[in-house]
Every structure is written in C-alpha cells, then in structure tokens.
Image (cartoon, rainbow, N blue to C red; front, side, top):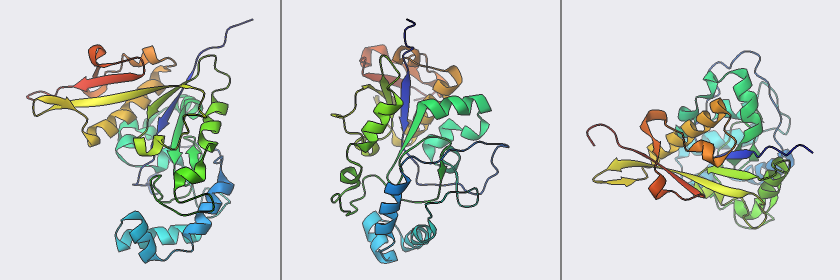
Length: 267
C-alpha cells in the first residue's frame, strides 16, 4: 500500500477592506461557500438592526454602518458573478497585499484552493475561490443569536469539524495558523484533530525584536504565497521562508511555533 502524503492547511484571517472594482483574471473559476444556510441566519439577525445599532455593535462610523446595513439588505443566498467575487480576490487588507493573489498563476490558485482556508465571521470558512458577497462581521463581534452571545458560540465546533474533513486524507494532518488570535479562537481545539503550527514574524525596533502588527499581517500573506508557489507540505519546508528579508530564527523557535525575524538596514 502506498503511504499517504502528509499535507497542511494554511489558515488566514479575512480583511476589513474589500475590492469589488478591479478587474479579475480571465476565466477565473469559482466555487460556492460551504455554510450558506448559517450565513443566512446571521444575515437575518443583522438585517433587524438599525445603522446606529450596527455602528455601536462594531465600533464603526455612521458612514461605515450605513454601508454595511445596505450590504446586509441586499445579501442573497443565491451567489452570482453580479453580486459576488472570489474571496481571495475580494479581500484587500495587509495580508492580501502580501499574498498578491491577482498575480498567481492558474495552477497556483488551484493549489491554494486545496491548501488555504480563510476564516470568516459571516461565512465560517472560505476557500480562496469561493464566491463571497461583500460584508463586515468580525469574528470577535458580540452578536446575539439563538446559539448565544458571540460568534464563537454560533460557529461552535463546525469550523473545526470542517477543517478535520478537509484534512482527513492526510496521514499526519497539520494546520499552519497564519490567522489572528481573534479568528483562530473560532477553531475548537478540543474538536480539531490536527497538529497546529504557528508562524510568528518579528521586526527589530527600539533595540529588540517584536511583533509589529502591520508588518506581521503582510508577512502572513507572504508566507501563504511562498507556500503556494513552492508547494510546501511540511512544517520543515516553511523554515526556508525568506521573502522581504525575513529568516527563520531557530533559537527562538519550537516545532509548534516557528519564529521569523527581520532586521532592516539602519535599525
């Protein structure tokens, strides 16, 4: 019997900034989200809230609240090219500036579809090519539903169970967490059957190495791109990551926590 090839699944956070305007690559394939009925339940709750309530709930401006109330009002359980675009092309924050999905080749996007999962407050988990309608709903939002007072209560074990299913063909399943702690908390660790490896990115500032949020977010996207382009399927393979001056720091790392450091010129 041929041995199963070990694999990994990379987790990313979504982004608050969205891009539904720029041109998409030609003949870009799409898939549909996995948890549309659950998303519909959340939308039903959000549609009952006024712009003022949304502004308070999410600590956002009245303008942003109005924009998102309009998004909830037009959200549909039927996805199309008119109301959606592929998640990895729609998210537009620091992580996705590092990932640069628009410049990935078709075979790279196909590999990403199998090995990357984007955690989402509204959609639970998205594959890169899943169609996504615009929204804002951070995982840490204290939204009351029939399941409880938080989105963590709402999603419960389902995200972890889904990840287990994605990895069930692997002999030694591994999750590489490139998501924020806010989002990774949505993965029930008691349910998850995979080993978890975290990547930490530190920059030298004021005489010491520390995590600087902006740079760390971008580095998570860079790591995802490195994995995609090099088809990395083991934690050991991540140690060669060297984009934009980062390098694996063995002395600060453990098998479950890989530390990458960068010292810019003059620092």
